[in-house]
Amino acid sequence: MEELTHHVTHLLHEVQVGNSAAQEDLFRTLYSVLHQIAENKLRNERQDCLIQPTVLVHEAYLKIFGKGEVPAVADRHHLLRVFSWAMRQVIVDYARRRQAQKRSVKGIRFDENALPDARRCEELITVHELLNYLEKEDQTAAELVTLRFFGGHSMEEAAETLGISLRTAFRLWAFAQARLKQLMEATLSRS
Image (cartoon, rainbow, N blue to C red):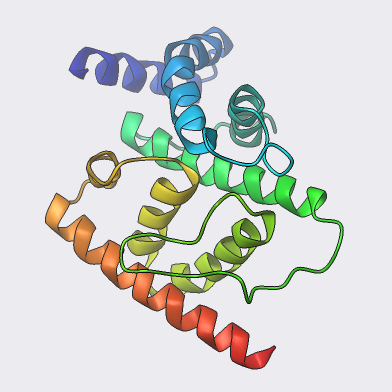
């Protein structure tokens, strides 16, 4: 794993200095990891709402590298964070396109251990919108939710990617769930 991390860091440096072959090599190197993340995220999703893992990986890659600009990414962990963000954007954009009518947020339920069911398009969009508020309050908590909910990371993987302890990750997860529930309740009371 450490060898892969060093190789990815080297490739990222090469990409940032304009080596287009390194960008292709970087994608090939990380493709199986990214595809596995996408598969884990989408495994139990409703097929009428979400996209296939291969499409998700490619669209996220294009969102990051497709505009001709090379993002300033420091290492493998940072790149996985960027990919989770891009996957979040792709999933939400796709859910919005698939949703033909105005959504109702009344069916979303939070519990102590999980975020809303990602199988419903309207829940994806709602979580995305609520995360925009959470990001203003606590960027790390919002990134943790993005990694777990949209990126399919385990708590251990998310903590490692964010560079925080597992204990801190669990504390942030509890905070994020409570805050998202408050935001949801505020949304429902305005409806």
